[in-house]
Length: 458
Ligand SMILES: Cc1cc2nc3c(=O)[nH]c(=O)nc-3n(C[C@H](O)[C@H](O)[C@H](O)COP(=O)(O)OP(=O)(O)OC[C@H]3O[C@@H](n4cnc5c(N)ncnc54)[C@H](O)[C@@H]3O)c2cc1C
Image (cartoon, rainbow, N blue to C red; front, side):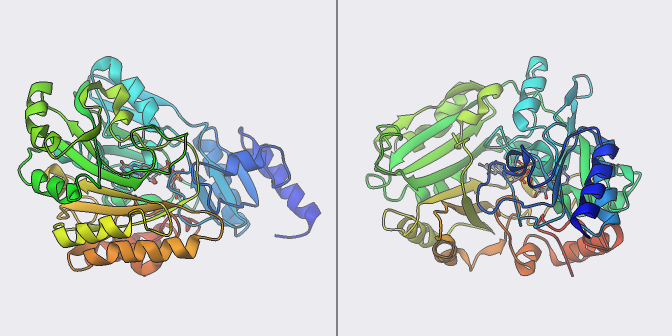
């Protein structure tokens, strides 16, 4: 970039061009601003812009382009892909506005809005968004990556219900992208992630849902060793109104964990049902009968409490994960996974299974880049990474997912935490779609300004 004096002058010029705060590495607030939910390998930008609106985003992108710097975007830091080293980090947390149009059943969602804001703003109208397991996840990035939510089998991917996306591209232009204005770009943004620029806001669809019959059934895997396979068999006959998953982990034997789980290998069946509580009770009866329950939290839940279905932890931590989208779940593979990720694993593993299909399998009226709609299940494995344990965790995830290789269709980018290589990115899409995405990348981001985001490349 130049001498220290030149750099200081450039940063002063940037600070003068934006309304939000600008943080250089030595500035107070820099660490807080660059660090989000993911604590492993955070961004180390040369400068952070705390953007307050689209003009700030345009100025930050133009500054980066002018000085040959890369750009990363961070809303909440849940989906940190590769860290940015040097370059400009655009922090969007201040752009968290949500505007609901109850009549049109849509919401305008700014770049940094988390699902909890959208849920709260929609609930007074009896509406809900296609949010996922953890309400503090950023709505925009979740949707750009597809978005598999609590009502996924009934309504499809979040990316299937987007009407307009405002995007600042590498040339600093703000584009209002719709199916009519830029059909190719609109296709690629919905499923192709943050590859083509910085989204400043988007209009998404809302659904007439005020409550779900939901929560969790918790089993001790020692007492119900084939719980994963029993859930798999159960999913074969459930209606599209039923979206479910399983989380499985060994709870550390420490006082901070709740008594019935502490020190046990626990499988948590996660239920989100859109019908009546009565029908829900009837549908889950075979699951309740699988064995003794450590905990049963199923009841009618207002959508504002939908975080109770998965009970994902909300504290920042260092983690890595990998996943496979599969056409079916092989019972032997599930048994192997239960063992590999169980009490003898060299690192704590959180296994996640999600039942897909239903509306997820149907292409929306305005097609998009979401890959592998034909997948029936998602299998993921996530671990906390202690210092120096990254390699152990990577090897463990490889071993845990190896039994699913035969039926694997590819992977989901939304559930890939940490940097992944080009082959892995490619595996998230149909070959033809990946080619189309790389052409769009070439057209809209030829200098690869935006590369910390599971970037596509030929
Ligand atoms: C605990 C947990 C639960 C989750 N549950 C679900 C779930 O149920 N369903 C599901 O589909 N996914 C789920 N995810 C995955 C999540 O949707 C992705 O990780 C998503 O990218 C997170 O977005 P963020 O804004 O919170 O994270 P960030 O780390 O802030 O952003 C992630 C990436 O998105 C890009 N990005 C962010 N904002 C913009 C923008 N305005 N314009 C362009 N690019 C941008 C950036 O490249 C950034 O690296 C979960 C993740 C976690 C950690």
